Image (cartoon, rainbow, N blue to C red; front, side, top):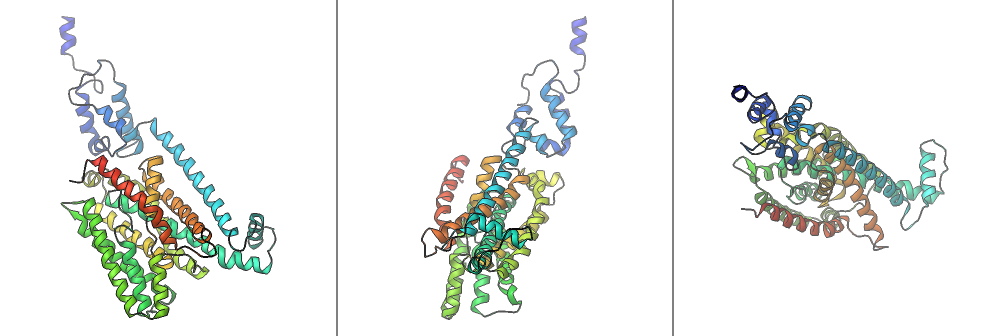
Length: 430
């Protein structure tokens, strides 16, 4: 009789089979986060297939899921990945951030001192300390002029443009939900360049020094909305359509730039060639001040959208259930991407592949979480462009390689590898 009574007794909640449906129902929208984006294997493994055999004793897995739902909340990293994985990723993120900052400072100092007129590293630091009122000593007249009027504006501009392009690439990949989105590949950089070239060829000056930036921003914004509208089908963004749309936009933008070149004079043709190839050779402090507000505004805004981008990675429907206004989020971040791209193109021309390469390398190193990925891409983009500019002006001395050509030479093979890898993992595009 005792055996029969025990068999009829209700099972304690949270231990065996019936507890799983109860937990999912109680969890509500947060339950969707359990089977979240790739990388949440631990959460998927906990759920198990329906009807799977489970031990009769108290289930540590069920207790872990219940605790995560109570403490971490829906959609958080602790809920999706488990307690053991989060500290490792955080420590990796801290190490990567520290490494990027140290490398960025080192490359900036080397780039400021190395060139046709060499300035020792100690003299660079001493001159900077003197300018900031922290002691040190000034250099001779030629050294001060080279350092503060030629080298440092170029270094600072490379950092701002690289941070803008790297962050724009991370945002676009999160907004469009596919790994191949990048301002240069899908035509946004070319569209912004059309606006800049048009303002040069037509002699526009209605915003003074900001005219090229404003025209680049308007053209880049129109391009990004065109690409977004044409690449969506059935409520989702198709990667093949996105790339093909980018090819068409790049071709059309190239045709418009060629048309402006046909009607331009020799001085304007020289300026337009600068936008097509991409270069920081004309860096000045006024150009730094022109791009600084756009870059600073965007970099201050985007960290507040990191968690929403993580939820958007679950899919549009789960993100809506979790309270995210998907269309408003996309429009806001598309505006930020256009701001980044326009600012970069307005002062440096078209520089491709930085926004594609940097976020992918960081995603491979630390996973897809945008809390680190977005600021990390800004740091990584600044580092890549600072290194690229240093190589562009020193590899073929006394000549200088166009920076956009150099990034394309190294970025194109990476994109080809990424395209093959993505296709192989998805089993084809169809």
